[in-house]
Every structure is written in C-alpha cells, then in structure tokens.
Image 1 (cartoon, helix red, strand yellow):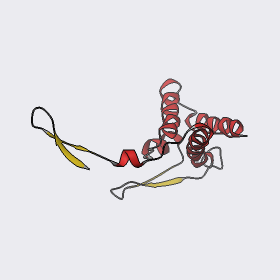
Image 2 (cartoon, helix red, strand yellow):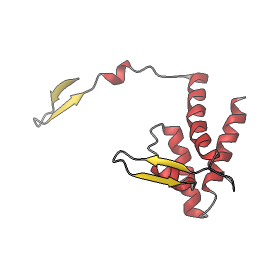
Image 3 (spheres, helix red, strand yellow):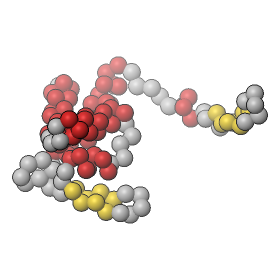
Length: 118
C-alpha cells in the first residue's frame, strides 16, 4: 500500500493486494461460480417444504433471527460472491413480482447448475 496525492493535493491509497490475487479462467472459473451458487441453494434447500427446518442467523451485533422464509434468510445473509449474489437478486425479483416462491426459484436454479456441472 502506498500513499499518493492527486493534482488537488488530496491523498489516496494504492492497494497492491489486487495484483497478488490469482484470476481463475476457463473451466476452473465456471466450477468456482457454480459452487458458490450451489452453496447458497443448498442452504435454502433444507428450509423448503412442510418439513423445512428453521435457520438461525446471527448478525455482527449479535442479534438473532430465526426463520424458514427464503427471502428473509437471503436478505439477512451477507453474500460476497458475485454469482451467489445473483441468486439473492433472483429471490428478490421473484418476491417483488409474484410475492411467493422465493425459496423455490433459488433451489431450482441450484438444481439446474448442478445438472450443468455434470
């Protein structure tokens, strides 16, 4: 990390860590993206249906949320991976348009990705 000043004298930092990261390409990148999306799908899979289990989520402040609603679980999760975040957005758009089926669309997308991986 180094401190540099722009033409107006304002400081900004240059982070060197970005150069050290290895970038995945080709089939490895595809498998990594599918794994991230399937991980989110697998979390919600067990909360689906009449015998669905509740999930206990604890945020950084220590506040506990217990729910089996897919939209609530995905809303409270802090998803960093961009492809996994697409599943969260898929769930949100399903909730906005239809109002139901948020868990189902994520589980369906995960199943489709699982079949695509084979």
